Image 1: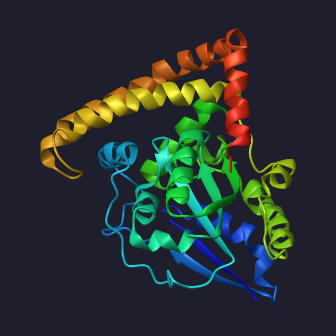
Image 2: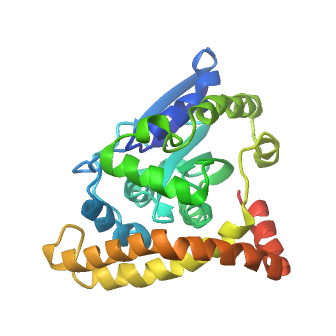
Length: 304
Protein backbone atom coordinates (compact mmCIF):
# COMPACT_ATOMS: atom_id res chain seq x y z
CA UNK A 1 0.00 0.00 0.00
CA UNK A 2 1.40 3.38 -1.09
CA UNK A 3 0.73 6.22 1.35
CA UNK A 4 0.54 9.79 0.06
CA UNK A 5 0.32 12.88 2.25
CA UNK A 6 -1.15 15.99 0.57
CA UNK A 7 -0.51 19.30 2.35
CA UNK A 8 -2.08 22.46 0.99
CA UNK A 9 -3.73 25.76 1.78
CA UNK A 10 -6.48 27.08 -0.45
CA UNK A 11 -8.22 30.36 0.24
CA UNK A 12 -10.63 30.42 -2.71
CA UNK A 13 -10.95 26.67 -3.28
CA UNK A 14 -9.11 26.85 -6.61
CA UNK A 15 -6.00 25.11 -5.31
CA UNK A 16 -8.15 22.42 -3.68
CA UNK A 17 -9.68 21.75 -7.11
CA UNK A 18 -6.20 21.46 -8.60
CA UNK A 19 -5.10 19.04 -5.89
CA UNK A 20 -8.25 16.95 -6.37
CA UNK A 21 -7.60 16.79 -10.11
CA UNK A 22 -3.93 15.77 -9.80
CA UNK A 23 -4.74 13.10 -7.22
CA UNK A 24 -7.86 11.82 -9.03
CA UNK A 25 -6.02 8.80 -10.54
CA UNK A 26 -5.09 7.67 -7.00
CA UNK A 27 -8.56 7.75 -5.52
CA UNK A 28 -9.95 4.62 -7.14
CA UNK A 29 -6.71 2.72 -6.75
CA UNK A 30 -6.88 0.19 -3.92
CA UNK A 31 -3.08 0.18 -3.61
CA UNK A 32 -2.98 3.88 -2.63
CA UNK A 33 -3.96 5.61 0.61
CA UNK A 34 -4.21 9.43 0.60
CA UNK A 35 -4.25 11.74 3.60
CA UNK A 36 -5.27 15.36 2.93
CA UNK A 37 -4.09 18.10 5.28
CA UNK A 38 -5.55 21.57 4.75
CA UNK A 39 -3.35 24.07 6.60
CA UNK A 40 -5.54 26.46 8.61
CA UNK A 41 -4.24 29.90 9.57
CA UNK A 42 -5.32 31.23 12.97
CA UNK A 43 -7.29 33.43 12.58
CA UNK A 44 -8.41 32.58 9.03
CA UNK A 45 -7.61 35.04 6.27
CA UNK A 46 -10.69 36.67 4.74
CA UNK A 47 -12.08 36.01 1.30
CA UNK A 48 -12.91 38.17 -0.43
CA UNK A 49 -10.26 40.55 0.82
CA UNK A 50 -10.45 44.25 1.42
CA UNK A 51 -7.67 46.05 -0.45
CA UNK A 52 -6.03 47.20 2.79
CA UNK A 53 -6.08 43.78 4.47
CA UNK A 54 -4.66 42.22 1.32
CA UNK A 55 -1.75 44.66 1.32
CA UNK A 56 -1.25 44.18 5.06
CA UNK A 57 -0.03 40.59 4.48
CA UNK A 58 2.49 41.86 1.91
CA UNK A 59 5.53 42.58 4.16
CA UNK A 60 5.34 39.26 6.00
CA UNK A 61 4.85 37.37 2.73
CA UNK A 62 7.95 38.93 1.17
CA UNK A 63 10.10 38.53 4.29
CA UNK A 64 8.91 34.99 5.02
CA UNK A 65 7.50 35.84 8.46
CA UNK A 66 5.01 33.03 9.22
CA UNK A 67 1.49 33.46 10.53
CA UNK A 68 0.03 31.29 13.27
CA UNK A 69 -1.62 28.05 12.13
CA UNK A 70 -3.87 25.44 13.73
CA UNK A 71 -2.23 22.17 14.83
CA UNK A 72 -1.96 19.71 11.95
CA UNK A 73 -4.07 16.54 11.98
CA UNK A 74 -1.64 14.17 10.23
CA UNK A 75 1.07 12.18 11.99
CA UNK A 76 4.44 13.87 11.30
CA UNK A 77 6.16 10.60 12.21
CA UNK A 78 4.00 8.55 9.84
CA UNK A 79 5.45 6.56 6.98
CA UNK A 80 4.65 8.18 3.61
CA UNK A 81 5.83 7.21 0.14
CA UNK A 82 5.23 10.71 -1.24
CA UNK A 83 4.48 14.13 0.21
CA UNK A 84 2.62 16.56 -2.05
CA UNK A 85 2.91 20.23 -1.09
CA UNK A 86 0.51 22.53 -2.95
CA UNK A 87 0.64 26.28 -2.48
CA UNK A 88 -0.40 29.67 -3.81
CA UNK A 89 1.97 32.53 -4.62
CA UNK A 90 1.46 35.75 -2.64
CA UNK A 91 3.55 38.75 -3.71
CA UNK A 92 6.08 36.48 -5.51
CA UNK A 93 6.42 34.40 -2.33
CA UNK A 94 4.75 31.28 -0.93
CA UNK A 95 1.51 32.06 0.92
CA UNK A 96 1.87 32.77 4.63
CA UNK A 97 0.13 29.56 5.82
CA UNK A 98 2.51 27.44 3.74
CA UNK A 99 5.48 29.47 4.99
CA UNK A 100 4.22 28.78 8.52
CA UNK A 101 4.06 25.04 7.85
CA UNK A 102 7.52 24.96 6.27
CA UNK A 103 8.91 26.67 9.37
CA UNK A 104 7.08 24.39 11.79
CA UNK A 105 8.44 21.25 13.52
CA UNK A 106 5.87 19.23 11.54
CA UNK A 107 7.81 19.97 8.34
CA UNK A 108 10.06 17.11 9.45
CA UNK A 109 7.51 14.85 7.75
CA UNK A 110 9.42 15.59 4.52
CA UNK A 111 12.69 14.29 5.92
CA UNK A 112 14.04 11.49 3.73
CA UNK A 113 10.94 11.47 1.53
CA UNK A 114 10.22 12.53 -2.06
CA UNK A 115 8.24 15.78 -2.19
CA UNK A 116 6.16 16.96 -5.14
CA UNK A 117 5.21 20.64 -5.29
CA UNK A 118 2.10 21.97 -7.02
CA UNK A 119 1.82 25.71 -7.62
CA UNK A 120 -1.37 27.60 -8.41
CA UNK A 121 -0.55 31.15 -9.47
CA UNK A 122 -1.32 33.97 -11.85
CA UNK A 123 1.87 33.85 -13.91
CA UNK A 124 5.03 34.38 -11.83
CA UNK A 125 6.30 31.63 -9.54
CA UNK A 126 10.06 31.16 -9.99
CA UNK A 127 11.25 32.99 -6.87
CA UNK A 128 8.53 31.44 -4.70
CA UNK A 129 9.61 28.01 -5.91
CA UNK A 130 13.25 28.74 -5.08
CA UNK A 131 12.20 29.66 -1.53
CA UNK A 132 10.07 26.54 -1.07
CA UNK A 133 12.73 24.31 -2.60
CA UNK A 134 15.35 25.50 -0.12
CA UNK A 135 12.99 24.93 2.82
CA UNK A 136 12.22 21.41 1.61
CA UNK A 137 15.95 20.67 1.38
CA UNK A 138 16.54 22.10 4.88
CA UNK A 139 13.81 19.80 6.19
CA UNK A 140 15.62 16.83 4.67
CA UNK A 141 13.14 16.32 1.84
CA UNK A 142 14.01 15.37 -1.73
CA UNK A 143 12.21 17.44 -4.35
CA UNK A 144 10.57 14.85 -6.57
CA UNK A 145 8.91 17.11 -9.13
CA UNK A 146 7.04 20.36 -9.68
CA UNK A 147 3.75 21.17 -11.41
CA UNK A 148 2.69 24.74 -12.19
CA UNK A 149 -0.79 25.83 -13.19
CA UNK A 150 -1.19 29.50 -14.03
CA UNK A 151 -3.63 32.00 -15.46
CA UNK A 152 -3.23 31.97 -19.25
CA UNK A 153 -5.04 35.31 -19.66
CA UNK A 154 -3.12 38.27 -21.05
CA UNK A 155 -0.93 39.73 -18.28
CA UNK A 156 -2.72 43.07 -17.87
CA UNK A 157 -6.19 41.60 -18.29
CA UNK A 158 -5.27 38.91 -15.78
CA UNK A 159 -4.35 41.56 -13.22
CA UNK A 160 -7.81 43.11 -13.60
CA UNK A 161 -9.78 39.86 -13.35
CA UNK A 162 -7.76 38.57 -10.39
CA UNK A 163 -8.13 41.89 -8.54
CA UNK A 164 -11.92 41.85 -9.01
CA UNK A 165 -12.08 38.22 -7.85
CA UNK A 166 -10.00 38.89 -4.75
CA UNK A 167 -11.95 41.98 -3.74
CA UNK A 168 -15.46 40.82 -4.66
CA UNK A 169 -15.31 37.03 -4.64
CA UNK A 170 -16.68 36.94 -8.21
CA UNK A 171 -14.84 35.02 -10.91
CA UNK A 172 -17.16 36.18 -13.70
CA UNK A 173 -16.82 39.83 -14.66
CA UNK A 174 -19.11 42.02 -16.79
CA UNK A 175 -21.61 39.19 -17.23
CA UNK A 176 -18.95 36.92 -18.67
CA UNK A 177 -17.71 39.41 -21.28
CA UNK A 178 -14.21 39.09 -19.79
CA UNK A 179 -12.43 35.78 -19.15
CA UNK A 180 -13.16 34.14 -15.81
CA UNK A 181 -10.59 35.04 -13.18
CA UNK A 182 -7.90 32.57 -12.25
CA UNK A 183 -6.83 29.28 -13.77
CA UNK A 184 -9.21 27.91 -16.37
CA UNK A 185 -11.49 25.03 -15.46
CA UNK A 186 -10.19 23.05 -18.42
CA UNK A 187 -6.58 23.37 -17.23
CA UNK A 188 -7.59 22.25 -13.75
CA UNK A 189 -9.53 19.28 -15.08
CA UNK A 190 -6.69 18.24 -17.40
CA UNK A 191 -4.21 18.25 -14.49
CA UNK A 192 -5.32 14.68 -13.76
CA UNK A 193 -2.83 13.58 -16.44
CA UNK A 194 -0.02 14.37 -13.99
CA UNK A 195 -1.49 11.99 -11.45
CA UNK A 196 -1.20 9.11 -13.90
CA UNK A 197 2.51 9.91 -14.37
CA UNK A 198 3.05 10.06 -10.61
CA UNK A 199 1.24 6.77 -10.09
CA UNK A 200 3.51 5.02 -12.57
CA UNK A 201 6.59 6.48 -10.92
CA UNK A 202 5.43 5.53 -7.43
CA UNK A 203 5.12 1.92 -8.46
CA UNK A 204 8.92 1.87 -8.38
CA UNK A 205 10.29 1.18 -4.91
CA UNK A 206 12.75 4.09 -5.15
CA UNK A 207 11.16 6.71 -7.41
CA UNK A 208 13.57 9.20 -8.95
CA UNK A 209 12.75 12.69 -10.26
CA UNK A 210 9.97 12.72 -12.83
CA UNK A 211 10.32 16.33 -13.92
CA UNK A 212 11.40 15.56 -17.46
CA UNK A 213 8.34 13.35 -17.98
CA UNK A 214 6.05 15.89 -16.33
CA UNK A 215 7.45 18.67 -18.51
CA UNK A 216 6.72 16.70 -21.68
CA UNK A 217 3.09 16.87 -20.60
CA UNK A 218 3.22 20.61 -19.86
CA UNK A 219 3.92 20.66 -16.12
CA UNK A 220 6.31 23.63 -16.18
CA UNK A 221 6.90 26.43 -18.66
CA UNK A 222 9.52 29.13 -18.02
CA UNK A 223 8.49 32.41 -19.69
CA UNK A 224 11.68 34.35 -20.59
CA UNK A 225 10.38 37.90 -20.05
CA UNK A 226 9.05 37.05 -16.60
CA UNK A 227 12.52 36.12 -15.35
CA UNK A 228 13.84 39.68 -15.43
CA UNK A 229 10.42 41.14 -14.55
CA UNK A 230 10.09 38.98 -11.45
CA UNK A 231 13.59 39.74 -10.18
CA UNK A 232 13.07 43.46 -10.70
CA UNK A 233 9.73 43.48 -8.89
CA UNK A 234 11.12 41.43 -6.01
CA UNK A 235 13.86 43.98 -5.34
CA UNK A 236 11.23 46.73 -5.15
CA UNK A 237 9.03 44.58 -2.91
CA UNK A 238 11.92 44.08 -0.47
CA UNK A 239 12.30 47.84 -0.09
CA UNK A 240 8.58 48.32 0.56
CA UNK A 241 8.32 45.38 2.97
CA UNK A 242 11.14 46.65 5.18
CA UNK A 243 9.66 50.17 5.06
CA UNK A 244 6.29 48.92 6.35
CA UNK A 245 7.73 46.52 8.94
CA UNK A 246 9.52 49.38 10.67
CA UNK A 247 6.06 50.40 11.92
CA UNK A 248 5.20 47.06 13.47
CA UNK A 249 3.70 43.66 12.81
CA UNK A 250 0.70 42.71 10.67
CA UNK A 251 -2.48 44.34 11.94
CA UNK A 252 -0.66 47.11 13.82
CA UNK A 253 -2.54 50.41 13.27
CA UNK A 254 0.79 52.25 13.35
CA UNK A 255 1.71 50.89 9.94
CA UNK A 256 -1.66 51.44 8.28
CA UNK A 257 -0.56 54.63 6.53
CA UNK A 258 2.47 52.91 5.00
CA UNK A 259 0.32 49.97 3.92
CA UNK A 260 -1.99 52.41 2.14
CA UNK A 261 1.02 54.05 0.50
CA UNK A 262 2.02 50.64 -0.81
CA UNK A 263 -1.52 50.09 -2.08
CA UNK A 264 -1.31 53.39 -3.98
CA UNK A 265 2.03 52.30 -5.43
CA UNK A 266 0.56 48.93 -6.42
CA UNK A 267 -2.32 50.58 -8.26
CA UNK A 268 0.09 52.92 -10.04
CA UNK A 269 2.34 49.99 -10.92
CA UNK A 270 -0.57 48.04 -12.39
CA UNK A 271 -1.94 50.95 -14.40
CA UNK A 272 1.27 52.68 -15.50
CA UNK A 273 4.48 50.87 -14.60
CA UNK A 274 3.46 47.32 -15.53
CA UNK A 275 2.61 48.06 -19.19
CA UNK A 276 5.91 49.89 -19.66
CA UNK A 277 7.87 47.20 -17.83
CA UNK A 278 6.25 44.50 -19.94
CA UNK A 279 7.48 46.19 -23.11
CA UNK A 280 10.94 46.74 -21.63
CA UNK A 281 11.12 43.09 -20.53
CA UNK A 282 10.35 41.93 -24.06
CA UNK A 283 13.10 44.20 -25.38
CA UNK A 284 15.49 42.99 -22.69
CA UNK A 285 14.89 39.39 -23.73
CA UNK A 286 16.06 40.29 -27.23
CA UNK A 287 18.98 42.45 -26.09
CA UNK A 288 20.21 40.12 -23.33
CA UNK A 289 19.78 36.76 -25.00
CA UNK A 290 22.85 35.25 -23.34
CA UNK A 291 21.81 36.29 -19.82
CA UNK A 292 18.23 35.19 -20.37
CA UNK A 293 19.28 31.83 -21.78
CA UNK A 294 21.48 31.21 -18.73
CA UNK A 295 18.55 32.02 -16.48
CA UNK A 296 16.22 29.72 -18.45
CA UNK A 297 18.80 26.92 -18.30
CA UNK A 298 19.20 27.43 -14.55
CA UNK A 299 15.51 27.41 -13.71
CA UNK A 300 14.79 24.55 -16.12
CA UNK A 301 17.54 22.37 -14.69
CA UNK A 302 16.97 23.36 -11.06
CA UNK A 303 13.20 22.91 -10.89
CA UNK A 304 14.07 19.90 -8.72
